[in-house]
Length: 128
Image (cartoon, helix red, strand yellow):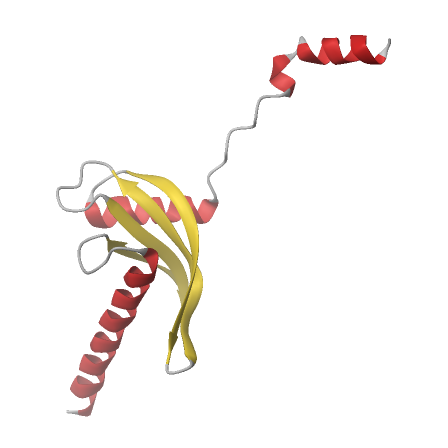
């Protein structure tokens, strides 16, 4: 078989050239389930964005934020979600794209601020 006839044989088999379908990462499946559980909506994965949030020259959080389009949500078109370790548990954070949240970075900032406020309340209650 010559080079040109081998090339033609491959061209006769188009499935060789079709891209394989993208498999959704297991972590993304978990975050989609969290979105469904907390907001009652289906979602479509759009992209993964690396985020590093620094506060007073210290890394406050670093990881990957998954961006999702929401299906039929009355207030938000997008959701940002990520997983993190909390002691012995894996937890998922879901933040909707509702002002002031307009990006993965702002979603992380809002989540950190909310967690800090919650921690202050716990400390005050525990000390009282």
